[in-house]
Image (cartoon, rainbow, N blue to C red; front, side):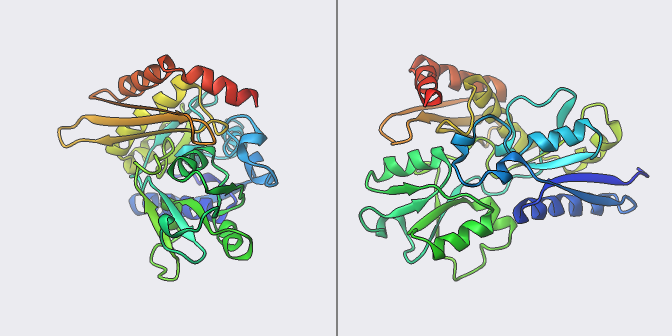
Length: 310
């Protein structure tokens, strides 16, 4: 490949770090290719004074990036998979899904080191309705306070504002190289306590579906096992027509025999209502769709419609 490759990325420190990791992996395999990052500000980056659920719409962190792909201003884009809507713009495809980082959520504390050590009425920061629902189910006394901004901004707010703790994706801390920071008081939450978001910990590398050169290049960093799991999770999300305004989670794990076990949930923000499901099988899309249909029969559509009406 001889042409210069323009890579689209959000301007946040984490997004640029993730994009840098992808470029490094590709550069090792294609040393003669020149890569250049094109920074893009998305709607989700511009509107920081309200929760994501109130901003509304899908693709808050990807729509402008996708448009740059359609307009051929960039050749591919690096997204956090959990930000990517289940429906892509026409003419675009996910060209590669690299190996997944930790899919789990992580609590970072101002002073304590465990959720159970927090006092009654502790204030926990998150802009995710999924995380809020999980926390309220774990302990109804927790006070959930919205917190927006890049990962480094949220960490600064933890210490500067009235928070006992905040929730972050552990993958982001890992990619930033902060998990080795011994001063960071943190606790990884297992899937039983806080079920991960669809695609959490995975990256999506999106490109035009007719760009054979880029597709061939991206295939070199594609991880089939990660993609196998993410396919089930995204099929679940698509069938439920989920988005950031709904407390929804879906997490697939590959078994030793090659099959998948999928766990999903839809709940209320206060944690009082929660619909849970677990399915297993060999075909990712079938497993995800089956799980979604089980929840729909349990009343998930009515719950989702009620949440959207708010």
